[in-house]
Length: 355
Ligand code: NAD
Image (cartoon, rainbow, N blue to C red):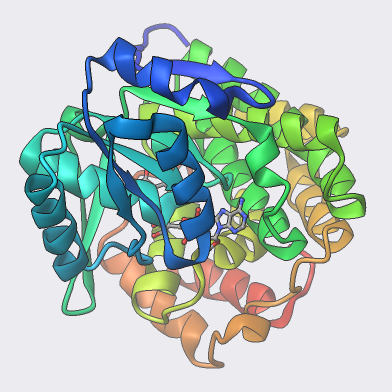
């Protein structure tokens, strides 16, 4: 920690139960006159509710957001925003919906107000992704960072338990990797540790009672902090492996993150002993080598599928993923070692505890 760079991300955050009701005022603050409301077909009703709160300032509801932002969907949404004379967008939903808002902001420069309803964290990052012919490209651009974010825990009550658990552990992965990032810094590490603590305490309570107000509040708070981590510092081996699991093997994003995290954290237990001891502390332990097993047990408590095999990872997946990862590695505190990575993926495939 002798020297570091900390770059804050300029966004306004409004947090609290029922804060969605103030969405029109927040739009005023942004100077937006007519906003197109973006969401998925599954969340159309919520989109309509937001449009009703906006009254005449709604430019309509565009409920066609799709996972991984296919370019055709992005182009159609941009055309709709232009046709409706929108000068801003409100993205209400998870990472897929916010990703669609980012695709519009990237080309058309319209400001985004995001209302996240999962724990994925995209609303806090200047990272966008677009998929063309099954190939996902990602990039960073300050224009895609939502200007205002309303975190209303009430909107997460409807998030099914299984998705809540995996999405929460997806957030946990951002915080864990932020602790040993190449560009880690003291502010982000504080947020990461607090995020891990909040998520580890709140998620079991959410799973036990999905309508538990305080647990929903604390899970969203932890997810917000994790999103800041993801947007502020680089990620490492865990995210590299997850990109391959999603991109090459088409595994679902959040469950893949959740199942793999104990193993990837364990891989770094010696090379990142000090940062991971902070994660251990936040999880109720004290040593870096406890993090993997503690995360594995947390997954079990949350009822998350045990092995990558349960979500469609094939038997030949570990060797192929290790090869792809080692061809183009990310920064990681421990070098990418093909055999060790294949071994950790094998354990994750079979749902074994990290070793
Ligand atoms: P998602 O947005 O795809 O949502 C999954 C499903 O859950 C959708 O049908 C959605 O409508 C529904 N849903 C969301 N919130 C709900 C709620 N409260 N109640 C009921 N249903 C709800 O899932 P996600 O995990 O949030 O996002 C995943 C996508 O986000 C991936 O494409 C990932 O790459 C991307 N992502 C991007 C970033 C970034 O910084 N750019 C960060 C994290 C994730």
